[in-house]
Length: 208
Image (cartoon, rainbow, N blue to C red):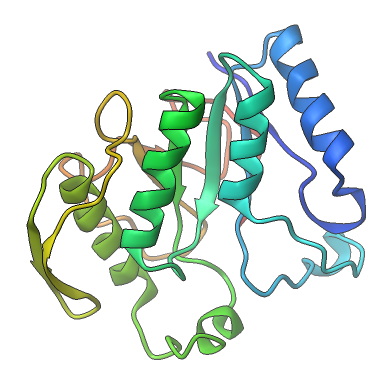
């Protein structure tokens, strides 16, 4: 059994001190991982959260935490596919060079339409965007001169450096959308489930 901690990087409790000192404390007391959510245009979840739209970027936050910790794993639960996957690949590879092979890329399709409408991706199939990310990251994390095309992204002869330390960054799929993950073990390392029942890791519910 492993234990992870969702960090206060959003809303009224978001602060540098809480994130960095809290993560160091989590490592000291034995947590296996710390986790962040992901949003572009954050809207608090109704009665669950107060109406404060502060939201620290997921990957930037994990990089800062990685710089002040040594072993604790750094997870996204879940990263939403509003970034171009080549940007995510560069950020993930850079992160592992700076803090070691501790990153887990948990992905989900997202809850809110307005975040995709803001970048003019409102008509895209978000589950298929996750699939595109899985396919592209799998390739560019280990290959050079990559050619790729699907309904979402097209590029040719692309090499992303630095490559991640330790090989491909684990890619997990999770979320509460009714449409199930269609990817299977070829593309995903594990499933993030919204209940503490998975054999891979037991976490409190993480909503994106």
